[in-house]
Length: 287
Image (cartoon, rainbow, N blue to C red; front, top):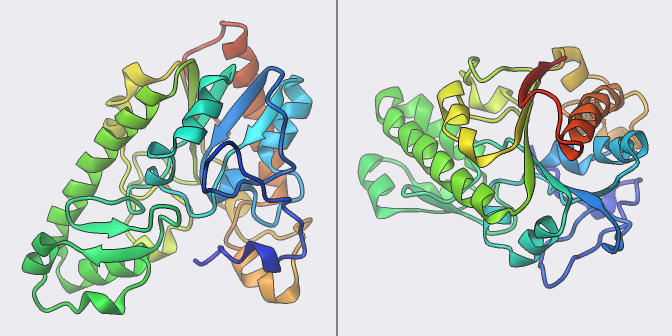
């Protein structure tokens, strides 16, 4: 699940920065002197291997400029402590926030890299006490860590799972409260919040550990919630139209297809237009 070698791709992402942020975003860099919609999210929002990600298509459909602040393998932490990102969102007409999983963020049990949130940094003393037999130096990525802990002891893993859930709700409330202006929360996965993960490694870009109760806990933090649940064959397996080399095909096959980006863009565009015009249902299920 390592997608970070963007510079080696055949596709030029025109990496850029906004303000004093240390994060590299997908360009070309936009001039923020006209109305725009900001997009926060992970690999799907960034549009890895996709020439025209869904945010670009939404711009064409809605007529409002899109600023793609998606980050590959992002967790909540990558945005929560970045004031430059918050400044961009502050001046946006609307901020679209993709629901991200709970695995890629620091918590009471382990810490992650501040910018590459899928990177496991260290285990806390508490986690080392719960799993005394584990050598945590063997882990580099959060999914590998969590898969191993669950396999070793499902009962003890429930303690970790509960912590991730509680920490996610608190962190999301904090992030959304920092974003001034209108906010559209977007669930984007072949699974629904009722289909909470069973196999951490095989869930792809699904928002791991997030359930309906957690989404409902954020109800007073957003202006609209959009639940997009495309068919599984649109979310992975189809690399037609992607800009990839033969070596990149296995990784690309795990990601959202070009067709899916197009379908998702149509749904988000309708919701964006409704929110900007202050009309339409507050919550909706799509695809």
